[in-house]
Structures are given as C-alpha cells and as structure tokens.
Image (cartoon, rainbow, N blue to C red; front, side):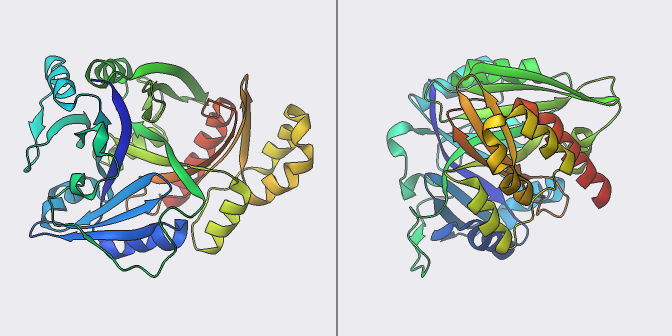
Length: 342
C-alpha cells in the first residue's frame, strides 16, 4: 500500500489563463496538454518531474467559492492503490471513487488524493477528468528543460491540535513515516510541525499547525482565509537557487524579503559561506545546514487573491532537512507580509 510518488498536483483556478501564465512565464513550466470537458477545462504544465494541472470550469466552482484558488487534489502513485484505499477506509476516512472509478481518499480539508498504480507515472491517460487529453503544439522549450527538477515537498496548514491525528492517518493509509518535528515560538504566537515521508523519499508532506492557546498568527490567518486546512506552499527543488531567483524575479515572480540582520548573523554561523553572503543578501535567499550538508531556500509571495498558497525554491547540497533554523525567519517574513496585505 506504500506511496511511491506524487503523480500530479491539481490546482483549481478562477482565472485559468492567469494561473497558467503565472507558472509558465514566471517559473518556466511548459503547457503540454489540454482537456476541455463539459464541467472542467484543464491544462497540464510540466517541468522536470513536476506535473501541475490547472483546472477551471463549473466542476471547480464549489471549491473556488469556499477556498479560492488552490490545490484540490494531490494524486499519489502507490504499490497497491486499492489496498491503500481500503486502509484509509479502515482508518475512518470517507473514501470515494472518481467519475472514472479511480480510488480517492480524503487528505486534509477539501484536498483529496487520487490513488494511481505506480506503473502509471507519466501517462496522460491517468490524468484527471477522463481520456480527453490532447497534446499541445507549444512553441516553448521542451518540458524536461528548466531549473525546477522535482517537487521537493508539500507544506500543509491544518488546524491546531490535529497534527498527531493527521500524521497517524497518513501512516495508516499511505505508509508515510514521521521524519521530523519542530516547535517554533515567535513572541506570543507558536506553530507545531510534523514531516511525514514515503520510503521512496518522493512523497513528503510538511504538516504545520497553530498551537492552541497561543495568540492568533499567520497560520490562523491562512485557515480563516482558506476556510479550513489546505496546501500552504509547494516546494520546488532547483540545482542553483541564486540564478533561479534572479531569473524568476525578472519574469515577475515576487519573493519575500529577508531582514538584513539575518545575513550579519549568517556570516557568523556559516564561516564557509562568507564569500557567498553578498549573493544571498542580494537575492534574500536563506541558508541552513544539518549533519548531512546544507540547503538554500526562498519563498514567494502568494499570487492568490486570498493570499493563501505560495511557492518555495530549495537547493540541497546534502541536507535532508527543511531549514529548521530558517523556520523562524520564514514565520516572521510571512507575518510581516500578512500584516502589510491585511
């Protein structure tokens, strides 16, 4: 029943053309196929191994009315989809099947997981909304090119007090093991997180939640604007983050600012990075390390009307973590951005 890979991520958009433009022009994704059905109109974007489906139309209206633009389905390939479906049902989940008979299990909030056989990876016929997919004659570069290689992880904002139950559910249904946990306090606000990951290392969810009893903060704001749990951000793995940030910034992608004092402290923490500090400072890129190596990361501003989902760029040089030392910096940066927007 073990989860093997994220087959595709389906993003519901009120203005599909704008969403396609954001990911294709901003991040260099390539539109490669389209499926225009009665209830939905979907475009498949690819880059590296990432497959992003942008969907609009009457079939997306209920989700959009409640949550605004965001991720509605994260399709997962499994060793045995039917067994995973039954395991989720045994764990108390209200399982279902798609209109084409595929097993579907609930995830968090109104986000679902379509379960697919692992051998189906990369097949157009296993995309959502039936067999109506048609290849596009795109003038863009081949889908395998670009800076983004892999969907490194998906960060999920859930309600306070539910972390353990959600992590246990993913273990029972999809065989995702607990990888790490983190508690961050910023003033009188606090957040908890648990990372769950597949044995293949290709399915990773970072579950984040506000701590009950603490003052409301950015995660409470997300839950309010999103009308419940949902995907907070998608993290894209790149080989070289600094040129990626510069390129995407020139294409119109907006990134969060990092306090200048962060880099003064960083020079003391990372003696080996002192020569690169100026480039990091100029691009607002964050740095962290663990016993395996280091990573560099940066987060975009949300491009959604409700200021909910955003994206992350991450470069790994051996590190297997998620920037524990940067969680506070991210929290504070998003909090500043939230206060400006609100």
